[in-house]
Image (cartoon, rainbow, N blue to C red; front, side, top):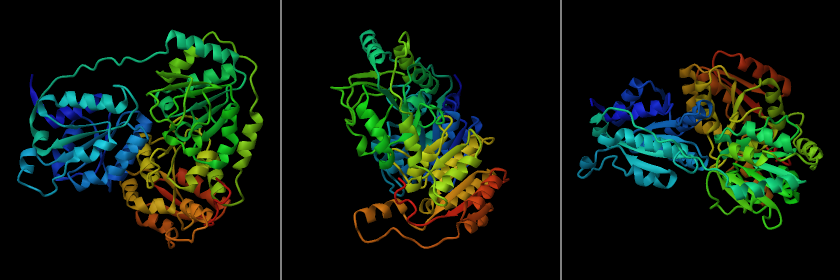
Length: 535
């Protein structure tokens, strides 16, 4: 056994797990770590804020499938990442958070930037570790298995705190044997019941979500739905599990009361509700206890036991989504079931675009963008509308924060996705308030030479909050802000910037942006009350 640095052992195990990129902001406390990542073949991407760095890492994860890596230095650097780590926990993102920290002995009589990172991150991570040289490789393998859900449960973030001296300390070399992960399967009795319910169903419906995306269950879902004529609704992050131009696709749901008015009655009328990897953390209160397992057959296939209490089920299966659906479908002939095409038509009509406004912006961009485009969207009224209108042809092509619903995510998500998929069109949609939170990351897009497109809905207001304020008949307070020349900001960072006020201008700008040689920001000016009645 030869020796290497503990930081090298850590980096090599991350590389073995498929990681090829890490994002963050360096400090003196993580220089050895950065050196080790580079030696292991993991690119370090310099960002301008740790929170944005985490979202860039997530964007890359959705393209390459490897755990996201966020690197932050001691104290304030680590604290800047709290929001994105909480987001990873709520949005089930496998993320390895690497932080530098003051050595334990040093901290006994030294106070500058001394902070218990593990105590801070414990409530928003699946596990935390302090790197120990002798078992560094073992710890990293544990962290990866926990973060990806291979050790059970759903994916999420894991913190590895790396003391300054530990990073340089000798560590044993050699691979670590990873045991094969045992996957659950539906039991014989439950399988017989599920097949019987499916054979008898005349009004079946399926709701799919995050667990199905993680399982790559799209092909199995399509085969099941087509074999049994089952209409499919997804959560917003499940969009594309079935291409949304498919006649059985009813699109995404979860945040729009307007969409809920069309979709919730279908679940109440159904005689078989199939929850295919449905994680209700994406959904709002209107989706609590929609179906009744005492009078309806409800099959819940998920990665983890139902401890959330948002719904009940007649049968709960903790197993891979695709394999379970295939097992249930096997040998069951398709029967005569309901036709929901009129509901699908009505739902699409409810979100028809106006001549100019947020719906028109979304419609024009969707028409111009090619198949396979990766879109990202920030939180706000525009996200709810876009998530209903933007048709996805595959999973992981509309990236957003749906569990935590944090602002300022779309721009860095787009940068990270484009870094991992340079040949695909990537477009980030955001409100003007969300853009201003992360405008500095335009410097990252420029430095990386990424021709990503950013579309900003400019209404000079926190539109969703302002709308809620008016609905409660409260006076306008704290939701409006002054005008900014967003296109000029983009040009100041070295990119292209254009302001549009009608469909033709937007179409021309988006066409040019997709063929551009650097990033482009399109500022689409709309009325400040343009979302009234739209979501």
